[in-house]
Length: 341
Ligand SMILES: [Fe+2]
Ligand SMILES: [Fe+2]
Image 1: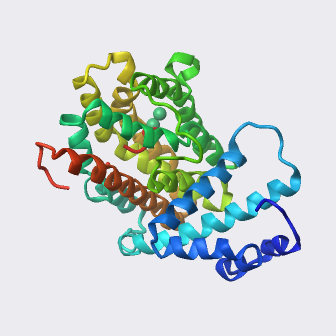
Image 2: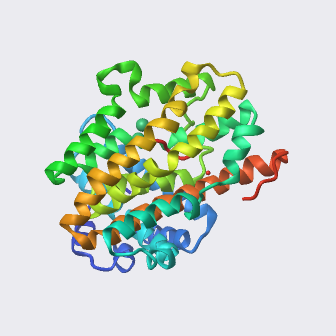
């Protein structure tokens, strides 16, 4: 599969993804088509393949040979584009309601904190009040296996951003890095949660990991690493800042209830508060200047924002179907932890 030939190179000029894929590999075309048609087994294979390619692409390792790297880039672009195009259909109705006027647009984004995909999800009520340590272990294993790293996503996104926007992204990045203190780095603190819950890295090829969190992390990496998705990435990262605090607060309460120490749940307690400030900075010093400079950017920003909420909702639903139903929660309120930032 990693061999390259002239047929692969033809993909560089491809206009229509699906019609060109047979020249690479008929089986791959079948896989993509089946995944886009909603076949669960194919969705699993599709996102595990893409996550593995992303792993090869972004992790520190010995250098790939140029042909191998080129092949992976082509394949990754094909898979990302096919997936993101298919998912855009799901947000069209909501996207059409986004107002163009900047202040009305900001207010619309903030209204999604209550009405957006995945908000006030029953999963977080369950985690707060009823989840066992084993439930948290499942939940965190899914989340951590696909953790793309907010710090790296911000760093990749900020390339060539306007100066004033770059400054706010840098402030956010520096917070992620604990303002220079190792033990305050968010990724380090997330590791403490994993340690407290005895979470092991999944064996083999994302064994036991659902496709939904893989799809979420694949999407965030596509947005952050490709310059053509700059505004989508800004929207998607902003969606995390806006919506993480309420989820993190519930997770904090659940972990406290189960006896974890302040140090062990600090990652969530921190994001329950800090991301309120991060959203304000994102809104005032990233979104407003970008919209002032390029008013039409509201549309791709809204797209990224909604796509991130939807991908989160997909995760919350699959986690809840495994946890809440099985354990019959006492809390019957109707009706999502993706990455905090
Ligand atoms: Fe963070
Ligand atoms: Fe944040």
